[in-house]
Length: 324
Image 1 (cartoon, rainbow, N blue to C red):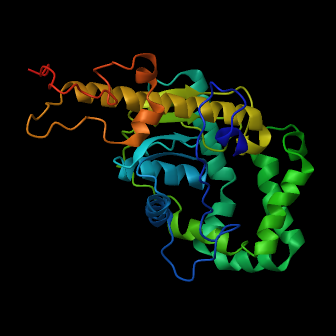
Image 2: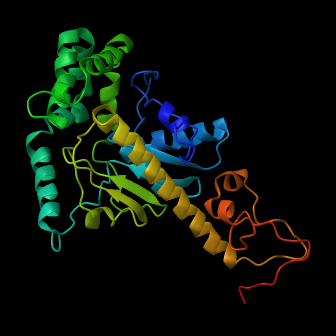
Image 3: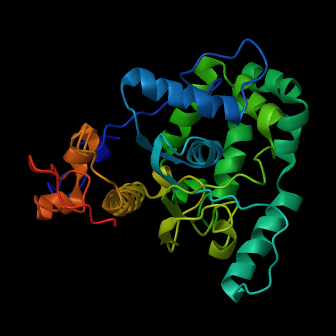
């Protein structure tokens, strides 16, 4: 978070970082009623950003956060400047025709995971309270349940400690134990497992990074069936399901680079839209009505008189209508 908010290099973009905790997880309260699935959480994030004063924003997520980020980009395009995700979940039942050998291997690995390693999700999706009692009653049981995921989902040969320091693992398990959220965190599976709308499409700019040892990897041709404006695509040489813990420096650099590409694409999209705008002599307002664009305008930093850009302030006499 600090590296994103206060980068060392003055040339790197800095962000206001808002990290909400999923309902039932860690620092959040435990839902007292059903209904807190990914759709409702996405709506809650938009409301949260409203209350914090952010009219538009970018979103990042992986795992459940990746699903919620997809929903934000697909359902709230007017609020999202773009998205970055490590889980580009494609629509179901796509053909493998045309995929290259590396992409076919991704499909094979993902299918193998869904057949042989998905029991934990099926348990929590159908009987979350049953396993939940064990997770809040026994610290050893909780440790075994979570450590199993770190062992299988990180990029390692024999032990998750090859990728993640022991203290980081214990911090993670301790947070679940002290907040007694082993059971409540399982409910999101009951509410939302396999619930992403197959017809949902994301048209805002998207940055996607897929790590080689992640549990679900979708080839780019498949990802493009849902994310229709991919502006940044990365396939790192190492890393698994927990990149912020396994490769923190690379993760931050890639996130910064991906979001910069997203913002630039958004800027350029607004530049072209502005070219077709007509200035109304009866309402000669400047086309730039949002402080955000003036603060982050890439084009105008290079050319303050750029007439194509949203931050261009027209002179007192309306310019020629170039859209005709």
